[in-house]
Image (cartoon, rainbow, N blue to C red; front, side, top):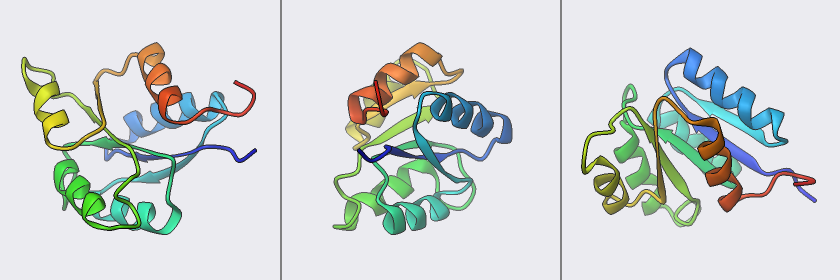
Length: 126
């Protein structure tokens, strides 16, 4: 059984560490990108099982990175979840309408995060 791989795209070091620590503790492998452009490169190169995409990023924001992933046949079917502090009324619907497969608001609720990640890829022995 292969270990599911999650690409975490986050430019805040503390948020990156939190997501990485949660996921690796539950048996997932992580790839990490701190910019939208790097996220597109890593997704194209490694075809992760899931992408957790921050929205506010240097160079390409999360929405533009998503558009590039959807436009490439190598990455078009990879599930991409918006992970963002943009949590005003209507933001969730806006991101889903933009093509994200799901939405997680910051600060991240660990139980919610793991439940959503499990829907897209199962960790070994879980």
